[in-house]
Length: 380
Image (cartoon, rainbow, N blue to C red; front, top):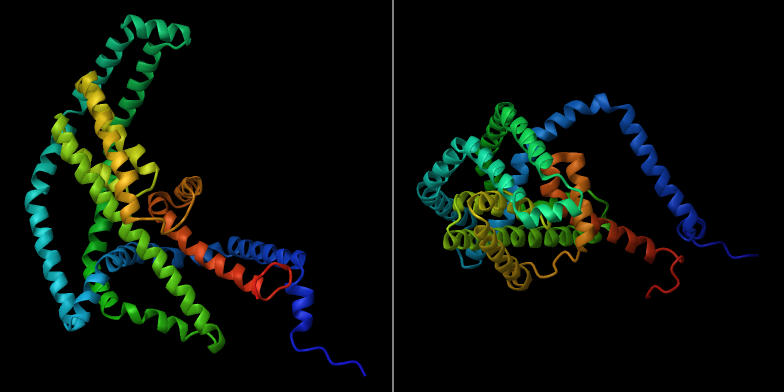
């Protein structure tokens, strides 16, 4: 009498050990999921509105949680009750915000108002600078050899700039709507953050309780990996952005670049987006320097070269390390794709979202590898 096959042998041999079957099932599930969602999109509209409403305050609270939770944990380890630690943290944050508002906001507002008032003059200065550049004998010879008409480029640029200025009013309306949404999100942020700081460390246990007993240990490990990836990225990227903003502000003051505070804050905010952020940040600085003088462009290039050298060789390796271990090309593709799909929010959340997805997919791959004989080189 032949021995009865062990329980689960058929599933392993016919499913887990067959690459074609595994990949076919995965593709089929993904295709059916996409097809189903496309057919019931109208049902998901209220859900999408709800998610859009709560997404921004939750995202902001999550970022603040990863920034401030280490401080609360430190005070708790020193014997201070967690509630008292959170209240102390709130007092410190309120004091810091008061200092920032009183010292940074007034000069920043003055620079923004001055920039808005000078937009027509800046447009004229750009046209004048381009005209002077086209009249340069060496530039003219180079353009002729390249079959490039600088006057046409100048007219096209002026036309696009005029369109941009004329459409600025509608853009301001959209901007005001966005600012209103941000203000409402910031208003509820302290309440969400309070409960996150108070009970956030117990959240993984609540999630794990929803899973079967045999999956809980693996789920805890996955959640711990996701938490490490997110915390390392968020803290590191924000600290790097602040360092870049401070260094650029100091550099702009040294070279005498106009709107130094405004340009440094723009660079600090955009630097949250890896690789593409610095490119976006340098464009307004180049325009202001180009209008000022050609020598200012040289000084701006020196400042940016020094800051980028410090960021690449000193700041990022010390703060970020290789916490995510993601190739730069992958980061750029992820940011561009997320930007096309979800706009500004997608650009900001692209890299941390990819990091979380990478953790999940890595653990799924390890599960298949350990439970299948498709990989003969796996370790026992």
